[in-house]
Length: 231
Image 1: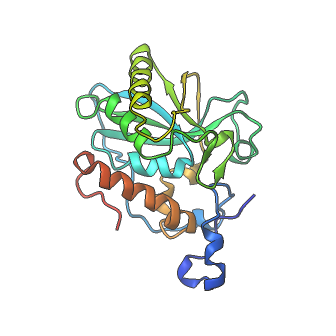
Image 2: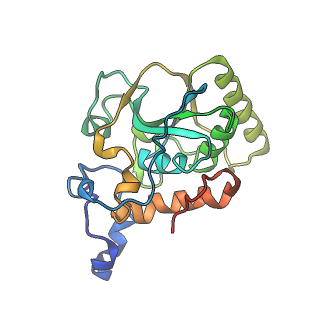
Image 3: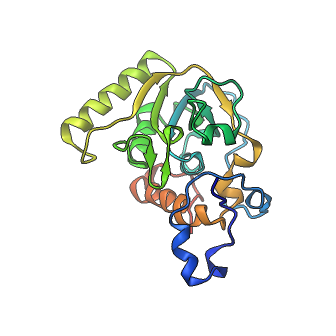
């Protein structure tokens, strides 16, 4: 396994800097998980109205979680695993690629403030849905692109979106995102939750997660929660 708990780039020798760009989201992160720095967190406010759930996979869940935590109308984002055949998988087992699970996020949202189609559009435009079992340097079936639909409406919306984008060749290639029924979601270990918020200076966060969050902010400024912006 690659260790992501390398010192921030400001203290790394110039000759080793390029190594950071080859890192993938695959580590026990023992040191990184001890950071006390926070820049944003999922809303913990009580919500008594109707909620809905969406489950997406699009590479490292640290990235996906950090993006959706900024979306207005999103109440909660949880990182975890879905789509596999092993019960209660560990992060290490998922990273070995033997469980069949994908790293994913489960999003609880207020449908009066944001709809599934908008969340789907964010998902597709903040990762590469045309690369099979890969996002950047994160390679393996655990990093596959997927929509785990919770009902027929989500399935139909996703299939219509993919058909439209493929026809337009919007992404420059055919979408390989799996559209599969949701079965079960296993919450990831505690240190993965709010990972970017808790570890903003961790190298993978600096060079990968932050870039993806900024990409979201540039594309969807009107969808951001007030006061949420990465510096």
